[in-house]
Structure formats: structure tokens, C-alpha cells
Figure 1: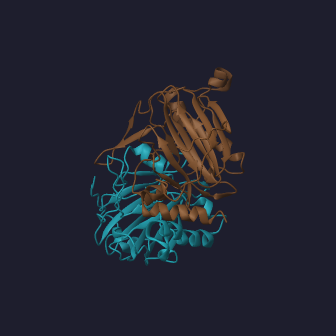
Figure 2 (figure 1 turned 120 degrees about the horizontal axis):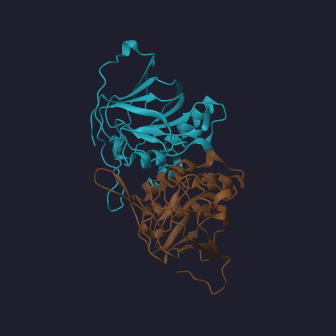
Amino acid sequence: MCEQASSPILDLELPAAASLSRVCRRGTALTLLDTDGGANVSALLYRAGEPLERYCMPDTLKAQHIGRLTAGVALYSDMGRVLASIVEDSCGWHDTISGHTTAEIVAARWGADSYQLARNEWRRSAREAFLVELAKHGLGTRDLVANINFFSKVAVDEQGALSFVAGHSHAGAHVKLRFELDTLLVLWNGPHPLDSEWRARPVRVILAEAEPAGAQDTVRCSCAENKRGFASSEAALT
Amino acid sequence: MSVSVQDDRRTEGTARLVLDVPAGEGFARELHRGEVLRIVDLHGNQAVDTLFFDAGDYANRYSAVDTLREQGGVYLGAGSRLLALDCKPLVTIVADTCGRHDTLGGACSQESNVVRYGEHTRHMHACRNTFLAQALAWGRGLEKRDLSANVNFFMNVPLTPAGGLEFVDGVSAPGKYVELRAERDTLVLISNCPQLNNPCNAFDPTPVRLIIWAA
């Protein structure tokens, strides 16, 4: 825990189907709080100012020999640097191999919808929201890569079959990301693409100051790979 | 898994192209709709890193996560439809004598080699450099931005129910092959993996054969 006594930089409620994008600086940490339970937050990360460098699902998984994300895990860019670390997690499993909802998925599963009909309850998809948020930063479809689905578990069996675990995240569950480099973060709050239910639940988003990873940091020291990844991030600061 | 689906109809004599690609080299070509590309693992347990793009819109490229979610499983094999970002197929695996292919392990790069194996591997040859060289040679604006999670044909990267990921010996063998049918005009980008630090190819990268037949 690196809680600061000072008030948070940001403390807001992200409504269902809403999105946000902002640069989160090194020296800050973001907490996502699933206030009602059953949330899913789809996320993309890019290195601020160097958006050709972005979160890389394959490098994150293979560097740490993992198939899911949880506390102690470093989120790697495709350039061998750690963009952010998961420093707290009450869920145990966050998915990063199943993608995100598209307009076609939303329409097929929950029916046609529009702003005219539903006003701000409109069931927009993650894909539509991601593209709008990315466009605010000069990015687009070519920058869409495998995303993270915070609070969601997609189990894999011995044969490799995938199954969505409904209700994986309980009310009050939280996950905390500490940024190791200035990072453009894009979030969308809405159902996992394998969920059968449209879960219109708000998620609380808190960004606060946090001490950068020290020499004995548990994420840094969890494996030799992460020590090298953190060193690469720190070499980029000078 | 490990379903073997052979294709005995096609011979090299009727092919449009027969080309051996040595380890550490790459290949780029547009497959026309209906054309079939066979990749032959000549010596066994070679990793063939491959990317696909809609030939009419490179931004609409192969999406590993959409492919896995829509097929409901993490390994590729006969019958797998490799989807673009629009969630429609670019190519379908129509024959496969290997039985399992990876799309979560990604391609090696200088930077990921440093993370995984140490600073001494920084200047070893790596797939993402090959992809970049192939992309630049192909032109038409293709660049780093267009490189995302690829397919690793003949590579075995099992996920465990507990949430682990392992790199293990390949399930391939000399002469095993996989066949892809283009469902639309599709640009194929290949890096025949030069990795010297990974047991998946027994630390010995070897050539593969590419054979293309008309629709």
C-alpha cells in the first residue's frame, strides 16, 4: 500500500457504457472499485508521448508465465518496459485474452439501441468507445491491440476451452494499478464480451499519488524478468 | 485437440509457388480469395510467426483475441477461422497434421528477449525485426503500428486452468503441415523464427516450405 494522505487527483464514478482516457503519470496509482459487484472494465494502455509503444498482452503473459492478471503482475509494453504494475487486487483474476465488445456483439445479444431511444442508458460497445477515445489522441483502429478486462475471469480447461465465469467480482472488489511510466490509459465500463447479461453498474475510479517501485518492490522482485523490465522502464526516464 | 486433418489432393507440381524460407528470414505476399497456403515444418518444431491483414484495408488485421473468444478455445487447429478486427474470417485452417498452434505467445523481439533471457540476447536476431523489415519492403504504409499479436504455427504454448502459461516442446514433427484458405484477399506476413533461447524449437531454428495453390 502506498496510500497518501493528500486528496486524490481524480475520484469519479464511471457510469455503465461510459469511457474515459487520460495520461496517468509515473508516481500515481489508479484504483478501480466495483461498488455493486459483477463489473467489467475493458482497458488499453499506451506510453504517453510514444503511443507506438503500447500494452502487449503476449509479452506480458510470456515474461511472467501467466495466463491471467492479478496482484504482483507487471503490465509490459511491446518495447520490453513495464508501463504499470498491479499492486493490489481482491479478485485474483483479470482477463486479457478475450477482447472486448463490438457494436455487432452488443446488437446481437441485447438488441438494437440508440441514444434517441435510451438517452444516456444507450448500450454503446467497447470498440466504439475505444475508437472515440483513441481519436482524441490521434490514434485509431491500427492502434487497437489486445485489451485487459478488469474484474472478469475467463477460465480455461485442460483442452483449452474457454468459459466466462459469471459473477466473478463481488461488491467492493478493487484492483490498483501503479504507473511505472507516464501512460495513456483508456477505460470503458461495460460487460465482458462473453457475458450474457448487460450489467449496467457504475465503477469508481480513483487516481492518487503513489511512491514509485522501490528496490525491494514485490512486483519488481517477483521474477528475474520483471527486474529487467523495471530496469528498462527506469532507463527510459533519463 | 490434436486432430489431424490431411489434404492429399494437392501436390507441389500443381502449385503456384513453392518456396523454402530459412530461419531468420521472412515472407510477404497477398493471398487471393480462395487461394490455399500450406506451411510445411520441414525439420520439426519450428515456430512460424505469422500476421494477416485484409488486403483492402490493412487496419482491419488479424485479431488473436477476437479469434479465440469466438471459437471458444485458446489453441488453433483444423477448422479455426482466423478473424480480423471486424470479427469475420481472413483465413480458415482447412488442413492440419500438427494439431495445435499458438496465438498467445507473440513474436520474439530484441526487447522481449532482454526481458526474458537477459541483456546478452539484445542483439540476437528476432521476429519483430523481420516483421518490420518485411513490412517496410512491402511498403504501402505498413509499419510498426500494424504489428500486433500473431499466430505461431507449430508452437505449443499451453495455458493451465490455474492461470499459468508454459512454453514446452513442440507437438510438431518433420513434414507436419498446416493449410490456410483465404476467405478474402489477405496479406500474409511471415517471420520464420530465429529464436535460440527457447525450447519450443529445440534451440535449433530450421527452414520451412511455403506452397500456394490457386483457388
